[in-house]
Length: 268
Length: 311
Image (cartoon, rainbow over all chains, first blue to last red; front, top):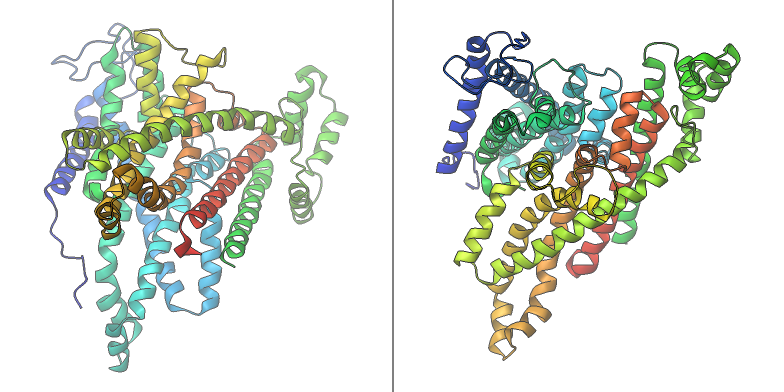
């Protein structure tokens, strides 16, 4: 039986998405180095247009936009990678456990997952930010707590049907243990699903950080963060429209890249 | 049978989410730095009028004077009896505040849902009837582009376009009926972009089916075949899609209400966070989570009503 989608080659769109992501990541690595200190103000050079000296211009306090955007992008991508990994690994392990173990384990884990699912992720993060306003950890913990359920549900559903399949039965009859079955039968089928979920999860985390920065319960200024920058620069739209466009474009770049890698067809 | 099971599942979900939110709020009350009772009393009576007695009264009200375990149980008991305490800022009962704000949020949600359904369904049906046409391709490309833009960015773009550039619509507040337009439109644009695609695909698969071809062959006009055979079949996936989108509606409400200063429940939550008003944080988060569970339950039942195969 070769229903596996594991070796489906990437489409042109997925390659394009990967390229966009790579560019964003490269920007987040190079810009903080080239751009200088993101916090240093220079009130003599406020809202300077992009030029050779400052490639992306300066903001309303004369801070280098290149440095600020670079730091902000790095923060977003780092948070995305961290929270996605923290959510995916326990989520997948618990999913396999729920499919494998007794009915009781399954019921218990599924009920917990249902409960978490009833609280939209953004609300959970907001609730946690109240514990430590302006700090980084509520985002990380909140996102991981909200995101693991997706992995759990998807892995549980497909592991259940895989474990009932004839291949697994054959392996069991031949005397292979659980480690072999997980490695040989489950993981190859689960990887493509996990990859799709992880790209969605990364997009969710980038968007949540920016959304909360925008409404003012995110990281505190002067920390460079995409959402905070947007709301700071909105009042200066009429004098310097390019300034607010820059963080918006970086965010759209990251999110579009992720959506394309996930495969546009499945995009919600 | 299925109806009872679905109902039970949502009920358990509602209980679990209330338990989760109230436990987190309880510990938040105790974890925040400084004397919570003093802070609440100061906010309520003014900084100059705080006495030790006032603080003690607040301490008893918030159960800060009792050991953790017993306080937690009585806190849960209060929540189950829908006694959510009083706001630390306005001193009004949280239930009153939240029910007032809920009205604004429901108005916003209904308006955006209405706009989204109108555009999404009509354009989706038209695209699905002529798949591959220029009309279909143009709308699908536009919808795909819009889907990549999160609601708060759409909100910023709409503010810039309608309030700053042409000064046609108010960007914030609730001065008159036009204030609802921009926030509702912000939420609706994203929703309808998804709806167009799902409706189009659902209708396309129905019109390409054997039973639809048979209905046409036996002499039904296009309109008759659509009304009797296509719409209900296409409605099932569309409803399922909408029920998944409810999360994005609730999350979008928080960002969009704050951005446009629309005095709904998401806006209240953000302000409660600024003010560290724990009873209001608990009340608003719980109200939104329960609203979400109720709407999900409604969507479940709608899907059952539309699609008899699931019963």
